[in-house]
Image (tube, rainbow, N blue to C red; front, side, top):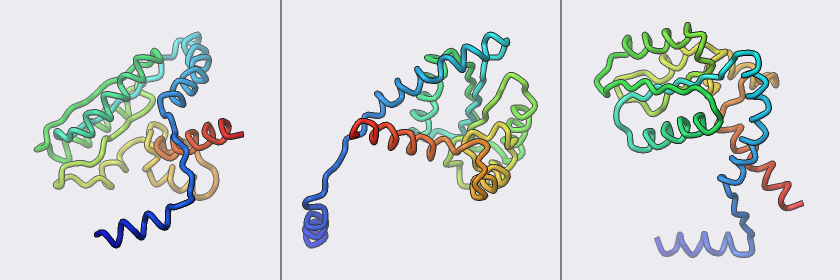
Length: 171
């Protein structure tokens, strides 16, 4: 263990790090989104996000709570659909299908990880590709790989925007 620490310290010696302030980046992105959200509002559209939370994973609870807060700050509709850890795959898919049909919901986020008895690949595949916020559907993944992204995966997009913002600050 000590040898590994020395090796890493030597490897990192001389490298510089850049502190990325996610809160500053989020505020900037929110300000950029506000006119687009207002334009949708003028047409009678309030974008809606539905998060599905299965079980009681503490990290997932925090992540979903932050999404709800961000939606509220931006004036967006948000819903959290909570299912117990013991729910069946059929019950989870029924919730997904209901959200797919809901015209007031524009994005669906199935919070992972799921309890072990649920198949994440099979259940995420049930999310309508047009509402697939994570970009996990085969349709969205295929479009992304082909260089024609429709809905960019939110985590990857967040990393890219953070990098862009950091590059702007360094210029």
